[in-house]
Image 1 (tube, rainbow, N blue to C red):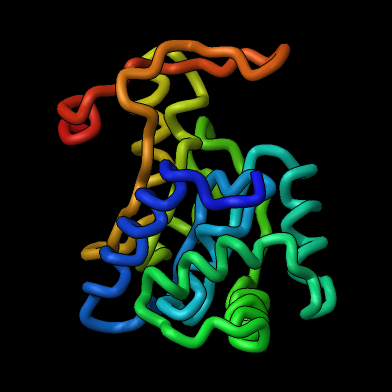
Image 2: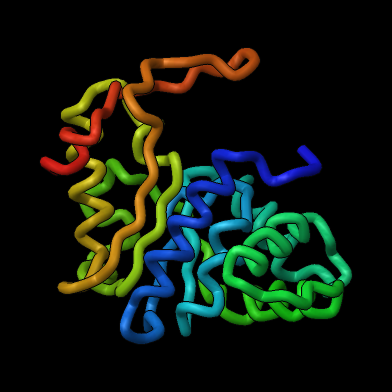
Length: 198
């Protein structure tokens, strides 16, 4: 798409709102289940000193690495950068300011990791209680249709959040398994109550 779709607008606004309300900049942040996307990282960049990104598929991280190592002229995510900065209240959104935000993102992202939420320690034992901010968008609810598996994955991933840390997680509401082209994605039919009880 050449535009930022309404669902992306809603979740990005929420992410920005939560991060902006924090009393201080986050020391260590993690985007878990980043996929081949950068919009959540671009949103988080000014709010954290360090941002790690993790995904189950190494190929997704190759796409992320390609963007991180590209020349500043890379415009692939500029529509998201423009939307994010406008949502933050920036008035002057000329190309140079968008490039500055994307360059900041490239500096803040420190590590790219292959991970599986089904592992008890998804990034190793040393990352338990490590992150001050965890962001995960439409990932953990796509692992299994079994709520027990989903709860276990949630516990595993949340174990990486430091005491008093902030968690921003998005799920599809009451989603059952669905197809995108020839690929089937599971859906554990999560309600607000199921997420709150976890």
